Amino acid sequence: MLLAVSFDVWNTLLNIEAVYRKLAEIVAEIISKDLLTIERIIYDTYIKVKKYALNNNTIEVHKFVISSRNLLAKALGIDYDQLVEAIDLTFSSIIETPYMSSEVAKILYNDVMPTLNSLKAIDITMGVIGNNVFWESMYTRRVLRVLGLDKYFKTQVYSDEVGIFKPDRRIFLEFCRRIGIDVSKVIHVGDSVAEDVGGALSAGMKAMHIDRSRKEKNVVIELGLFLANSLENVMEALQRLG
Image 1 (cartoon, rainbow, N blue to C red):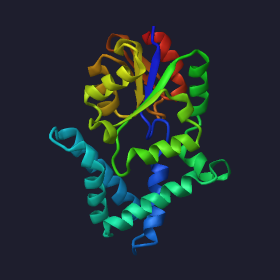
Image 2: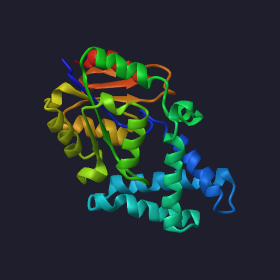
Image 3: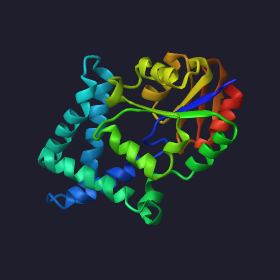
Image 4: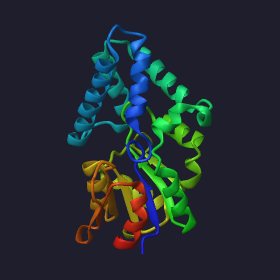
């Protein structure tokens, strides 16, 4: 029987593309590039630094956000401090009066609240395991708090705080240690095959890969893996993999 669920944040609970789009709008006021070009630079740099993190075992995780921002600032042709200010303005625009802001609908997937409420109703322990790229975990924590999601989570474990990146199994084991539940009784939910599925399975957890564009859900019992097309599939995953 599965007793706990850990969630990735970006592109699992919250839409990172909406954040990048808002960041691009703010950067566009600083430089003379069109919005689509800026969005492409941000996304391409994101993919580049994520790939670097996956393939480099000697990376200093605590300094990764700073080095990633340096790369992005250089790619955009702006100063580092300008990028930091733009990121801060981006999140401020998202979290200010959130329930009256159209930004909330853009960032929060509509299957998140029903899923969290369903899990809470059956006393499933929940938490977060997240990597950080262009901003520190404090920004993610603020968004989750303002949106009212943090109250569902017993713990939040972030790469910049513990010095470990997903898919390193140690960050998943740290999550299980904090919630006091054996790793075999936990399922991790995320959108990345390498970081979320690979990391969780290597740690001895079950895994649910979410792809909202997937036509059909599926389960691979022998791997402890559920292939989902909605976050709400986690209820079925608990039954099928438990």
